[in-house]
Length: 161
Image (cartoon, rainbow, N blue to C red):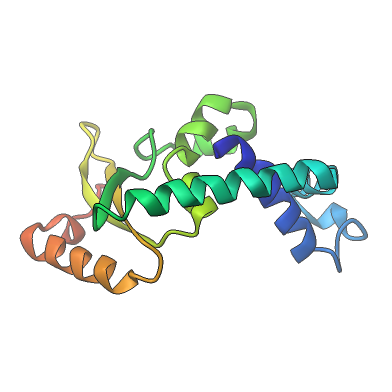
């Protein structure tokens, strides 16, 4: 799903920016322009294959939720990337993959999620996790988040700047 997320997101972004792209391409940053160009380069057959894989994956996740109420999943594989790391994101495939690995699948399924603070690294930077629920159960996410925050105080703590 992560591999399919990029071209699908590119197509959706190209549609959203159709009125201003490419006529105002110079006003777009390289990352956004690259994503739109990726979307514009997709063939109809490739887009349809992504759509079919997305539907199959969504079905598997829906089946998973027949036996559980919530998933507890990390938000990223890298806690608190630095500004320098983020600036070089386009050239760091491992970091980019780590930032998207745990959120892209649920973007693809449309599953509701809520991200909550879960502590700090040894360097004092924040880490987070997400609860994932079945479709149309955002109320369960809010209740779970509220109960978690009643039992912990991570949401009250802030990193040193």
